[in-house]
Amino acid sequence: MAPSKRTAPATPDACTMAQLQDESSRTDLLNRLKRAEGQLRGIQRMIESGEPCLDIASQMAAVRKALDSAYVRMTVCFMQQELRQKLGVSEEQVPELEHMLEDVQTLLGKVR
Image (cartoon, one colour):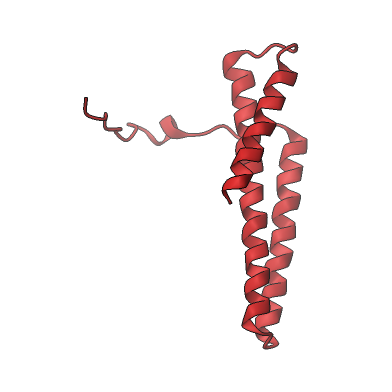
């Protein structure tokens, strides 16, 4: 059986994703990005002052890891939000869902 081809949605609205609704998740994500932004500024200063490439590369790797971590966290928060909403997860099921998504976050973190 041949794999089915996905076609582009007829309207731009058809592919719109939900936004993170949880304020604490958004705050956490913004704080992670601001930290990475500060690291990037530090790298720029290192380059301007002529720091060794190895030191700069090390800091770049740290920023990449921070951004990867922020991406994984955002993805897991989105999954949690959507699963709760679309599947109608009851309050009794929330701890089980949270545990499962913590495991997903751990597994995704190992990929980096």
